Length: 124
Image (tube, rainbow, N blue to C red; front, side):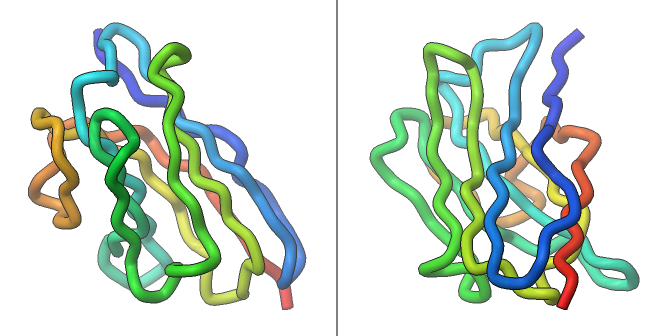
């Protein structure tokens, strides 16, 4: 059974930081592009960040550019999302996702494997 498990979410004050982790079991992630998406109440799933198989190429959504950083440790089969200067509008459930291809994907439809999500709440 292949699973992605997110962790690291929680409650933080505006201006603070969190680091999310996404660990895979049952499948090596080292050959695949990975991404983070988020969904706030009443809204659709929004692209946050993506990284290619090697970590050499990344992409970010406009709303998080300059504040969030995605990276990966293929030896640990884990992808991370470092979130700095958090804002109340960053409040959402954050989902990790894996592609079937090595390159970056920025669309929801480009990902086939999804985690269950982790809640991030930013208070003002």
